[in-house]
Image (cartoon, rainbow, N blue to C red; front, top):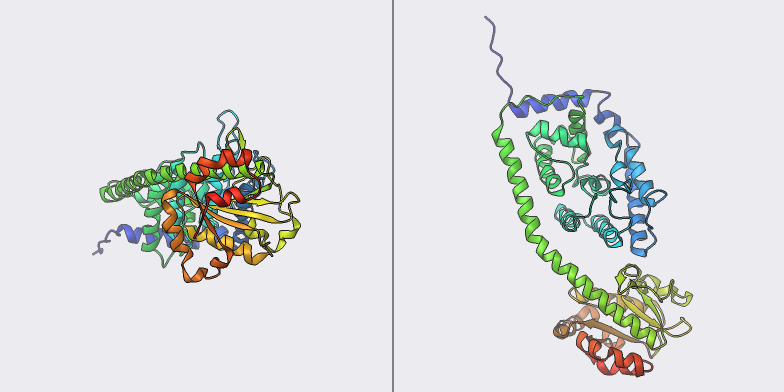
Amino acid sequence: MEQAVLPMSPAAQRDALIDRWRADPHATYRTWFLWEERLKNFRSIRRGIGQIVREIEGGSFGNVYRGSTLETVVSSIAEQRQIFKGADHAFLWKPKLRIPDIYENEDNQRAFGRLLHACDCCDTAEAVIDAIRRLDARQIKGLGPAVANLLYFIHPTLVVPFNTAIVRGYNALTGGNVKLGRWDHYLSMREGVMRLNAEHRSRLSNDLGAVAGLLFDIGSGRYEAPPRENDPLAAQAWQGDLARVREETVAQHRQWTLERESDTTHTEVQGWLRDLGLSLGFQVWIAANDRSREYLDGRLGDGCLEGLPAGLDGAAESVRLIDVVWLDTSGARVVAAFEVEHSTSIYSGIVRMLDLALGCALGAGTAMFLVAPDDRRDQVAQQLRRPAFSRVSELGIRYLPYGELRLHRAAIGRFGTGLKPILEVSQAL
């Protein structure tokens, strides 16, 4: 009498599929995931991403894809065996559609750079997802989830690679309905992939490249997903993920709108200080990562120093990120430094001032200002009293309220000389 064969559970079916896939010498697990050169590529690609960020922050990225550092990095990813073939397509400039809109629109380019920088500097899934949502809130044409292929090489345990075949494989295996080109769909897919990977961790890896390779081979037709004629629970789980992603995105979009408005105000105040410094006859330095920001009919860095003088070598790294610096006519001595603290932590501005003071020999007449809204005086004073800033009292950092700067800047620029007028409208703390 023949013994009945019990049906396999969905988890057991997936286990059997993964075992067969891992043993296949032509599947992505052996051809790419276990490839000896793979980790070396991680290091070089991540260095290249850092260079992209530096070029965007410094305003030297340019407005073309061909020949750029981005093309070099994306081409390296596209050469990562079959799984990443075509990864460069999403970044190629399509002139008729004018996408992806990061070459001609500098604000979008900087937003792209901020995403890469934020992910390169963070180490948690929450921070990565927050950075993705910030980018998605800008609705940049043509800059969709294919960017995840860059982020994967920064955080292989947090970010899932993304392409057409991976999406098809995920939908086939889980019963999902993820669509290409939308970040909210990508984030919902990521949550499902994380659950799938955790369920089969002993057969896959902490590195999400393994599960992505499995999904790729399913989506490209090398393997078929286990039959799933009717699985309402899987579809319900995916819908729940998608709904949660959308709700969180809507909630945070309001906050980011306010932050973008704050960025505009921050740039405006920098512009006031730039124009005032030039009117008073000083040479002006604008923070390297702000020089290319749009201001009035030009850029914030227009008319300012292109590079720092040799005499500031000891503090060059600190000076280059201070919001506005006034130098004497020779460009050899710092006359005044300004940190604009519109809504961000005052702490970082004070630290940069300290770095400047400790990094080079400042003259006795050098003045330092924290420029902030009128209602932030108490916050500025409180930060300056921190024990970590015991040296600050020696520097004589002053508080310059927006209101006083707005009210007097025209008269100071027209009739003033030296630092005396700006000292008179600021406050000692």
